[in-house]
Image 1 (cartoon, rainbow, N blue to C red):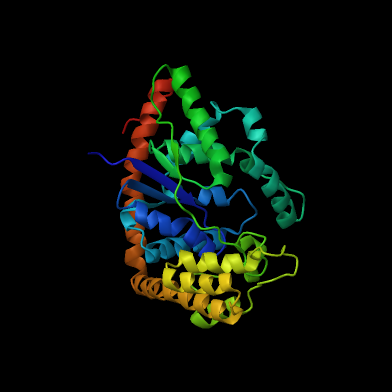
Image 2 (cartoon, one colour; image 1 turned 45 degrees about the horizontal axis):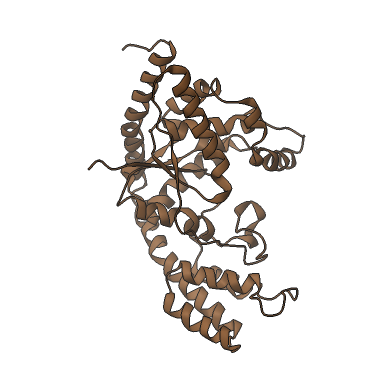
Length: 336
């Protein structure tokens, strides 16, 4: 039986921290066994916020090596800018997208404020407003059946579905697959410095733990993790302690999790023991991934060529989709 297609993408911004790993990448690795997967490094999207050209290119390749080190197969990974059909389809789909719906995208409001702050001149890119349509193109160009999403990403997927439905209706053909959300159990990983906020690279170094950090760094950050802030209602687990238990569970250290949870329920939990177990767990996750990255970096040119080759192979599918879209919409196709 033919496998269903799964599409997911990641921006080459910030470091690959444990929040991104447990929240997305670890799940992507598992999905490869069941689905026909496409995983994109979306550098066009990274341009919607103030950026450095040199740093952007460095980040793209660093993320590519990181993803392979985490266990993604090279034949499933592509770099968006090596497949220009994404941008071409993005423009076409702009003409099938609702301006009103774009104005209601919540992330535009959030990122606009960040963009103004970073640029220092009150500049907001038009690309930031329209990037959800390019995101729809990223999905629809591969006729993806499923997109792994969290609750905060549902709005963008709904836009993709609306665009696909409108295109199909106006063109009089059920051409685009309407992608469905693929919900999986995703751990909620919060900042160890402020457990009321999600772990995020944009919040600064102390708010995220780099997956590729050395052991000493990981242990230091866990030792300084916030546990109780004094404002937790009696009888409830504090957000900081809950986050540490979440990290332990996400690391698949279930035995340690259960044992320490038993101590907690008895009122006998020592935070030093919990932090020690979490640090051990994170180091055990990080160590083989770091070793794999070093192995990949020893063959840097070959690995880069492999990613370029996989992007070229994946591009063939994108080219076919755009060819058919242009025929349906009355646009001309280039003949070579």
